[in-house]
Length: 482
Image 1 (tube, rainbow, N blue to C red):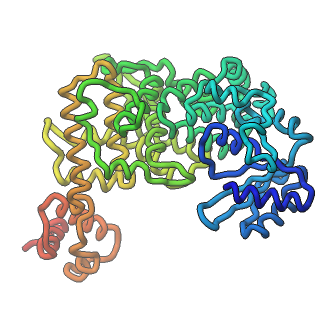
Image 2: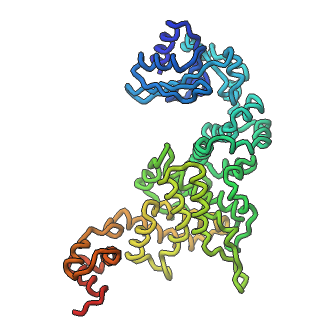
Image 3: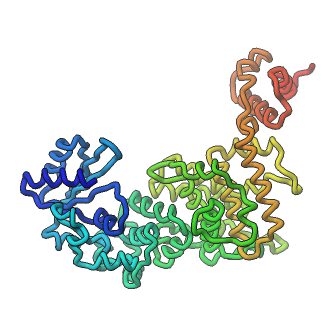
């Protein structure tokens, strides 16, 4: 990185252009953290200068924001590296005064980078706040200038393990409604980084206290204080937070809430699952993050579906299906990718189903396992963990060890079947539509698909293993006499 900065400095010096490292690059250097990005402010338009620099460094020029004079140079020679160029607003002191937080309002001249510790320009005490591990705004105007900073304050606290200064918290609370003035993509990106961080339930509760959670998810408002049946320990909103905490616990995330006893040792886990949940789905967002988002939203439709039976028992018929539709609207509003939308909606819609796989304390049949993985598909394993977390978060301190053991054993078996015996989930093809049409003279159409699906189910359950057995099954299903 230092060689790249030196090259930029040389090219700027040739054109008598003032330049400073600033923002996150200086913050990370003071904190002793590695950085993949270089933030530089210059006393000129970054668009002409950026193109010249990109050409000289064999990089790609990317105009980011022409209104605010921000451009990027993407370098790919070795590890990917970004140089973000911004036009300096007045002097460097004036520029720093327009930034968000003290820890981001530091700079160092490009000619002084070899003596960074003694050369940092720090008018707002950013180094002291790094030592004190505090996120502090420069002024309340910082949030009015860019409301994304309302979420960013919490995100920085989550990623660095810092506290947010009390005055800053009060400023965020006063200005929380501004958050929806920024683009949905920026809201989504900041929010997802908060949810992806450890102890996400703690940070979600903070967002709620600040007014930001309901500003982003107004659909959650009715869950606050929403009564639940006696089997539940918390109301719907607190149960949702606890579900996020339980997901982290079950995924072995360091620092997660401990539910006590042998709960974790009885739960399914493996190196394969660890790799599975770290898979990136879109925009740097992982399965793990999407599972936690599903945990927050899984009961969002409970208030609107609550009803009472004649016995007085409280029920929420259809809340998972209605919830999936509510969540679809949220995911579309926040501009998630189509795959992310389908994944989270499927988890919400099917979150009760893993608990219905076993009957009378017996392990699920092979047919039931097949149907589950067929129907829930891309998020079948994710939904199992959502169901397990839902169970923990429903009972809370009232958790019964024996019932948990039985529930966890059942779902561990289902997961093991998925990894151990792929034929249960995806039986190999032994006949196709042409075989059925040729043998029995049927007309191509949906009925052929239904017959093939019946054959696959029978394969999964071990009832059919050969082509002859499959065709015999088809014969019985279409009612032909021997």
